[in-house]
Length: 237
Ligand code: B12
Image (cartoon, rainbow, N blue to C red; front, side, top):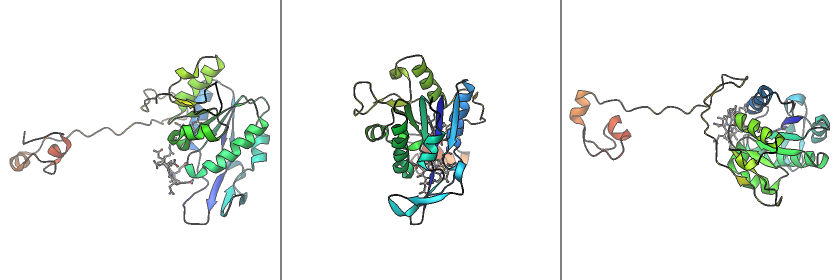
């Protein structure tokens, strides 16, 4: 069984902006991809399942936590969960997510824990060094997570899975190996949630200058769009 967890949210009453709740879109895509791959999973909405519960944040009195408590989250994880995936979209959430991860690890000693989202993508080595996570999915996770789960299930080397950082078998304190990133541009759109396509914006091709612009053209980088987008331009063409 694969358990996916969206963490509780943080509300702040000081200058730093933090908004909760946010719909956990990324985790929804991950769940959809796992569902499409016909693997057994459940999702725990750490914020969404207790929207009206706001409690003090242990380390700061200008923050509050919205959502389920750690005990309520761990109680929802089935005893047979062997992979536990947690989302951390914002680095501001990381201290809380890390605490949650340790609370999960305490109860699920042998589960394999995976972090996904922007924080882990930005600093995977740091995550693996200071948390109980075994692997970090980098960037868009739909294809990666399925490949990762299949590789683990089939006993294939994680070193062959692109787009992850993971703890090496030889020592839990060692930073994980970081594999090459996937190409974010998805070439297929089979994931059910989805019209979702994370395509990069196509670069505009420079328009040919009009005859009058051409007459005025000096060929410098500030001259016209054609010159400014053409590298190494040295004069009108
Ligand atoms: C939309 C958005 C918001 C929305 C939030 C909407 C929402 N539903 O959460 C709003 C406007 C509220 C917002 C606010 C902020 N944002 Co913002 N936001 C974005 C933005 C533009 C897109 C995020 C998104 O919805 N992506 C689409 C979904 C489908 O993708 P995803 O969530 O990334 O999920 C994929 C992967 O991350 C991964 N994944 C995600 N979860 C999991 C879990 C598992 C288990 C696995 C395996 C994989 C996985 O797979 C998913 C599918 O491919 C990103 C920039 C970007 N281009 O990503 C910045 C971004 C996330 N925001 C950022 C920041 C800094 C903020 C603010 C702190 C800004 C501020 N000063 O107020 C606030 C914080 C809000 C808070 N809650 O605390 C930074 C975060 C950087 C960081 N390391 O913290 C980003 C990356 C922009 C940037 N480059 O600086 N934001």
